[in-house]
Length: 212
Image (cartoon, rainbow, N blue to C red; front, top):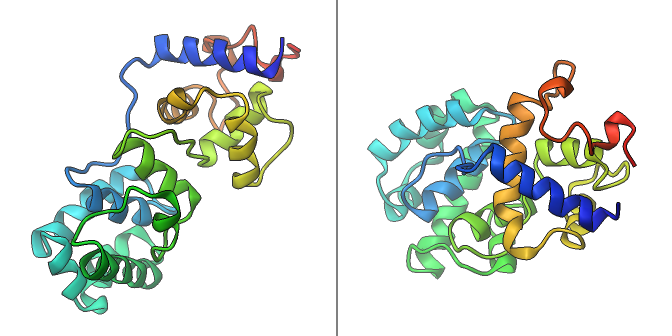
């Protein structure tokens, strides 16, 4: 089976297994997703969803957060870890949105990459979830699972995984596919324990089980 055919089969099976998969970060405005995805680095989405409630209660808009003292932001987001650098990036990012984009998040990938603390993973998440554009989010689940499944061959660098997946994943499927990989990675194809191959919907086509 070619990688492209394997990808299509995996996409279909994961659709059936996780029909309602979506981003697990809570947000109702694009700028809030931008904040949350920065806080989610080395932190669980569940904790981020709790911490941002206090942040938005005190700073309910891009303008308010842009004007906030970095120390005040840090005091609130510290439970997410790396508080100083995250607070500094959030402050810088909101200032740019306020001063250059009229408090809006740009829908251009390269423009997103120029924002403080925004890398390819974050930019792809914004492009896919907020703007409905083709996106592949190479988080830890995506990298681990696509290697195990045989969609990529022993590639660990996020950008290289992303580039390899663009060649075999239909553009319109990329964003939802990556969300489903997160669900599957948490529930079945786990990192900290032995993967539960016995209950995996992909066990008969997965490279990890010796299927070529």
